[in-house]
Amino acid sequence: MKWFAHSVVAGSTAAIIAPPLVPAAIAGGTAPDWFEWIVKATGTPIEHRGPTHYLSHWAIASVISIFIHPIAAAFCLGGLSHILLDAMTVSGVPASPWSQQRMHLFGGRFRTGEPGEYIFSLVWGIICFAMATTMLSSEFMPFFYNWSELYDSGLIDGSEWKLNRFKLI
Image (cartoon, rainbow, N blue to C red):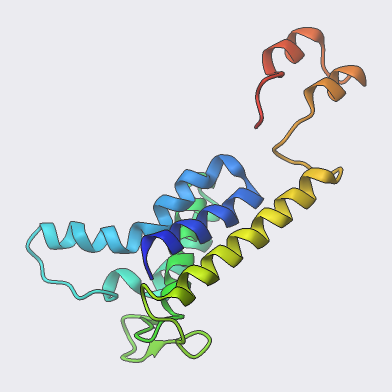
């Protein structure tokens, strides 16, 4: 898939969980491809969707990074989303370095650069936007604070309200 799809899926998913982590998720969502560029820049030959696209490595890194730091977790989960999206394509992705088989999701129905890829990523983005909008209209808003309401209820003082009143996140 193209970087547009990887960026939309990783970024919109991260926006629901923690909006400040969207840049890290987008960077991770494109990382397997630019890791290839770095390896090629050293003069080492590497195939596309090869060692930088191992599902096992990104899954393990995602689990470990959750215990390290939120930015690392967003980056690794963005990378995992990249691998899962590439697994929906005809060529698939390698499951691990110990297996010659390539993994396919949904039968590998998407072809890179064709309309199905863009439709899927835009539908995913719309679903995430709808979920975020629903969260904003409900009482549960972990990253979007209503500073004036907090001030009116006496939870914060006037100086904290003045300091934060124009901050969205």
